[in-house]
Image (spheres, rainbow, N blue to C red):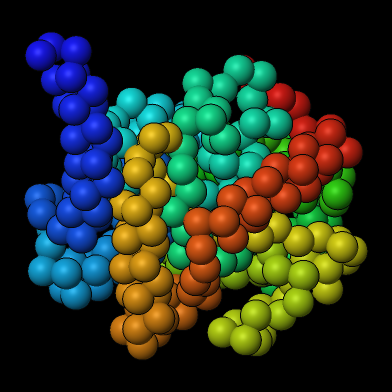
Length: 326
């Protein structure tokens, strides 16, 4: 009797497995979902991620809880995400830095972008802005660069942490413009910009989503944007290329990943619902006001972007002689 019972149980188990997975995907989410974000509350990644998941919460009548884990170039957040159960109830915001820059920037990385995560989808493209204090005498980026070159080693710039898009954009600028400045890493965008407003650093390079509202309120002055071509939302803001740094471009993008091993049907469900949110006028308009452009696509599209950008930034870091971090 026993020798027939075991195969029967095995067969029933195999038959039951796909049904269970399908039910899980169909019912997702049936409890609160944690979304880990690698920036401080109020930072650009935090603000943009909340726009998307607030829309998803309304559409799905579900709860999405943002958990902010800034620091270490995003490694703290990524390390937390990879250790969670691969069940679709812990999602992670990940960007060009954590997925494509850090593997070449850090000597030792506590996570593997390819082995530890499943890409879900890209959400947006975003550019950084070079900003100075509103009372700074510089009227153009060229004015700022000239002053720095006349005072080598005396000035500093800030960005929201080591390995962030602002840091990489700043190091690329320092290399291409041959600027002798010190880098000051901050815990997040709010802290960086607070010190910029207070005059404790000379300039910062941060996402337009957090810089431009302060420019509009008269607290900061924007001198250049990191796109290669002018951005329609900011037609009067010159590019670095137009400011004498030929060929300069630094694009920041963000998306969602889940722990490796998350069932594909759940990944697809999250991707589908995320794309629905990104296609709404509410999300598109809210992101556009912050300088971000929504992007939709499949998990495979996101995977290809991550891979191509890994190659790009590996070459960039080597050619620009950016010092690797511990």
